[in-house]
Image (cartoon, rainbow, N blue to C red):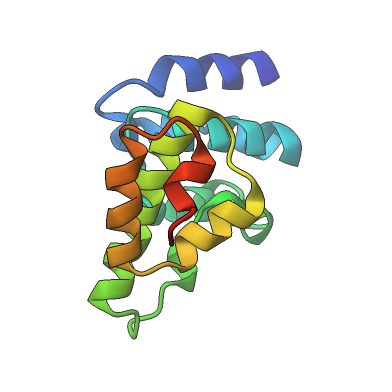
Length: 147
């Protein structure tokens, strides 16, 4: 069961129709332990095909409703935490923060927790400045030192 679940993650993670295949990919979710499911969800989140938090939330709610709250914490901004009052600027900042963190992780490896928190707490202007510096920066420190 575990092997099948991991192989499906490998198979579907690069497909452009990943959001449409999410039910097939996560069919074994109810039988997996929390750690294995977390690994698969993290792998999918880091993959080249973006997964909408709403799609992931709805899928997990349908497949493993008793564990949804536990495993949704891996998402940067879970769908169920997004209130209608969230402004457009905040939503834009969260989107840009997610893109910046993915770019930095591909370039420099795993980001320290405090740095990740700083990025997601920042406004759009700061994130855009960091993105500009990130293209040519020799290390993480040089991206964030003047802000």
